[in-house]
Amino acid sequence: MSGEWKPIDTAPKDRRILLLIPMVDDPLVVCGQWNRDSYKNKPRPHWENDQSYLRGALWTRAAQPTHWMELP
Image 1 (cartoon, one colour):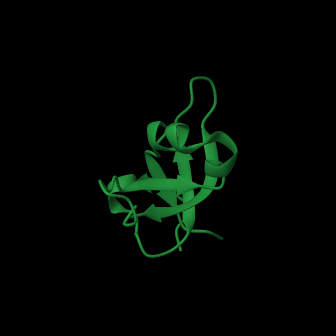
Image 2: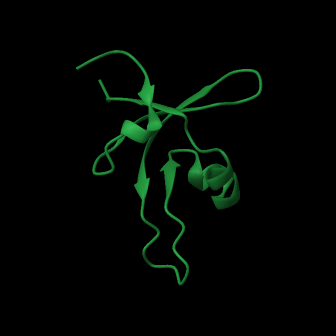
Image 3: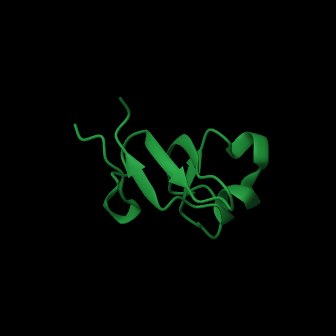
């Protein structure tokens, strides 16, 4: 297991991982996973995270991660 951030396009979509979300002043590190959004009429797959319920779906879809890391 490596302790380095990897580009999000290499992230596994089958398990929970650490996500790095770019913010204006300070990046936000959260636990997250891929959401296929399969129960919607027009699915919009996206990365969801442990802030999704707190901040809402619009924020979650707008604040997509750029990098990921394995959970320790």
